[in-house]
Amino acid sequence: MKHTGAQIIVKLLEMYGIETVAGIPGGSILPLYDELNRSSIRHVLVRHEQAAGFIAQGMARSTGKPAVCLATSGPGAMNLLTAIADARADSIPIIAITGQVNTSLIGTDAFQEADTFGLSFPITKHSIFIKTPYDLLEAIPKAFEIATSGRPGPVLIDVPRDVQLKECDFDAWPDIKKIRLHDIRFHTPIDEYSEKMGKITDLLAAAKRPVLYCGGGCDSEEAASGIKAFLQNYKLPVVTSLMGLGCVPESSECFIGMVGMHGSHAANVAMHDSDLVIAAGVRFDDRATGVVAKFCPDAKIVHIDIDAAEVDKILESYISVVADVESVFPVIAQLVSEKKIKADEGWLKKISKIKKECHSVECGRPKGEKLANPREIISKIPQLACEAGLAPDGLIATTDVGQHQMWAAQYYPVERPRSFLTSGSLGTMGFGLPAAIGAAIANPSKRIVCFSGDGSIMMNVQEMATLAEQNLPVTIIVFQNGTLGMVYQQQKYLFEKNYSASVFGREPDLLSIARGFGIEAIDGDSNPEWYKKAFDNNRQNKPCFVRFSVDSEENVLPFVPGGKANIDSIRD
Image (tube, rainbow, N blue to C red; front, side, top):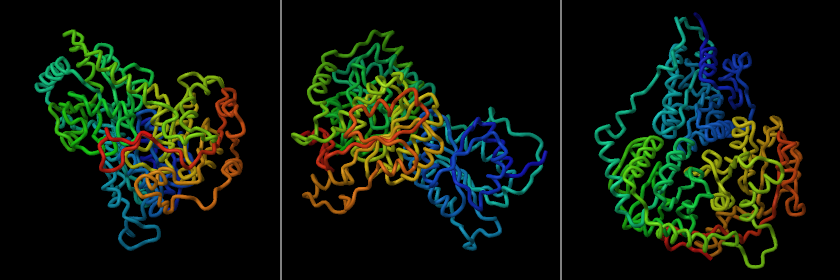
């Protein structure tokens, strides 16, 4: 059979079950777009390529399945790189397909030529440059396998324009069900695995102050199920990284909160005082640990991670298991149950008491403040959505980056995996809105709530046009304080209130901007029943924009300044 490179790409995407892709066409990728328009695949036309990458991330983060984005050569591909780097930092499986100038023009400084393949190398899990249409038959299945196997991540495929147009003759399509990579060699060997499970169980039996520390590797239904089985038999404090929120329900008696720079005081105390830390699917990021030498200083660390490169990278482990969290916790749960091992109930009660005493929506709020309290609003979103007619599990939250992000991490009641989507490691402003669009596309029965600030929302504000065009169930909630809030706060505490370039000289009329894009906008300051429209189940498929005025002196507390231990966080 004969097919062009573009036809091969589209056919293989269909074989992998890709129903939606996001991107912007351009000269070097037009052959692919020509074929795409004849396929079953829906295309979402974004207004900036970076948003295409974040839409793919919204789909991938909320489902766990790989998603695809497209861009043309040169500036198109360059605009996509930030979203690719963000996906790499947070281990998100996306496939980025970029057009490239004709092979005969490569290296000649041709119009819209850039070395996408070379530039992408440090920020992808894998990059592939296509030289012939035949290469695509192997490259695309390989890309999907690499993106999803082991520790997930982004893969870029750069395809010259002439390769997209050229025909090739081949006998059969690849059998994608049989394509597997042999990454099993990086796992803990089977004979060691059983021995280590026994040792971990013995450590749990001997521990007086154990803590379970969960990261993004636990953010899946399968991992959450295993952790739940473990906690039913062994009740201990559970703390998470930013990326781990949702693996244990906020309502669980064991959940203490997020650890780190803006983590709960109780979570930081639990880690500091622990004698055993079970670290699962987490990599001891600097925002979580603070001063490493003072992070769980007296604890034996059991590190469970799919990525062998993360083990012993920051903190030395007492026992390490290189495996996926989904397979480990059911085994530990069974062994704990069989041996009738129980945790010290007094330890969990002590930490829970600290949480109850310290966790307040008034934390960081100026005294006597009359403007909206962002923490209180965020904490009540699921309740208000239910009052407006949505089911309790009918929400997925996304955030941009800044103070609102940390307030959401601290106070939004995350009850399920893959229901709180945020840019963690790279911390990319502009993530929230396009990620919400992607989540809405992948989860048509849910309403997406996007938390943002007046700094972040402007980073990809043009995607309101995409949102309105797609008419998706996304509610954008913006907290407007006239500053780059997190920068302003750090300048307040660390730079003697020298507010350099963190205060906007003029505030835009965000409500008019939203309406200009064709989105219904509500002033939350003057409408106490804003949520009835924002989450009305009868208008499920309509976007909505809500704005609240917030005092610039609102702070995200606790706050651990650089060079300080988490235990020494500022709390008032």
